[in-house]
Image 1 (cartoon, rainbow, N blue to C red):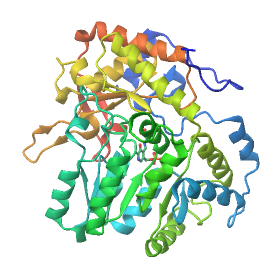
Image 2 (spheres, helix red, strand yellow):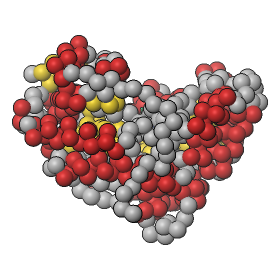
Image 3 (cartoon, rainbow, N blue to C red):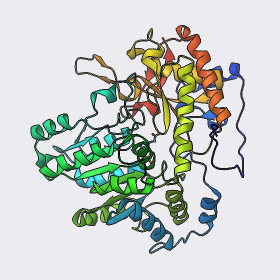
Image 4 (cartoon, rainbow, N blue to C red):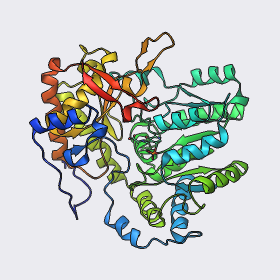
Length: 456
Ligand code: F0G
């Protein structure tokens, strides 16, 4: 059969708000033209993030009732620890309330002034946690990974030549660890190949530098390896994930993604001495070792979520749903980052609106229009998020101007995808009418969340 379908049926539903276009113009103005300020009851389809927005299964909801809310030694923690150890093989596993808490534990222990943390591309909270300690966060994405218009199987790969040069330049003693973000969210949800993970490990081993994975979307990455990399077609997702983790010395995870639940995260390591430091840090800031800032019932939902995410029929549906939205947009001539990644379609705003220069934030203008046209919320990932002002006051744009349409897991159906594609295709037809934007207020740090805008 050619028709692909959702490998689940719907047991409970949530109504979504339907609003009028004229009213949406007002809501957007009242939200300072920043979709982060929109109230969710004014949004028909919310593609702001795939993080913590997953629809849980009936087994996960049932597992919540089984949560053992003991402060210490909860059996729910051991279920959570067992499944994560089975997948990752790591010796020490500590829960955290979400991904950035795991990052804070890791970098407040290993970072500091004069230290360098390397990555294919740091996610913004990872960079934030590193820079907060005074350390430097550097990205080493390959050239093709910076080109939204070029097709490649593993555009999340790290550039090993540039990585080696940098290690030689700053000195291995100043590099506490190197990370690989799988999949590479900031670069379009693109996967990292097993070969690249293995070669990164080999390179780092020569310098005695540990490798950590930022593994929020490890199962989606494993699925791409199965489909695209030689030698993996007959392996299970679990076997592929196990091999990915076998090259790493530890990881941080926001389990709000491939943990298939609404909150949670963890940090894991094989390093006994580091683990002792993590424990102290966790107890001071998150909670005891067996709950780390979560309700124990959340650990139950996650333990079940980690079983479900390894199901290949789920992953096939997941990746194909994202691809189908991308394909509909491509057919309508809408420029997107290709190939589509695991969790989102990224519009290429630079090619969508070439008449709007990067300093007038084409991505923000498109995101605003998408809300007005269809009540759909998306997110600019371009010069608002990553643009800077240089020392001479000159504007330095982001590498890419993108708008992310992140697809929550198991939440929207195929007709929702069709509706999204139709709205964006309509906007693309009249794209020349879109106007540039300017910032009227911004915070000194992570400005995209709270900045206020006007049309120029
Ligand atoms: N690392 C990556 C690659 C991420 O995508 C995220 C979150 C984090 C770390 C931080 O995890 O939110 O649980 O603290 N990404 C979300 C997103 C917010 O929308 O892409 P967190």
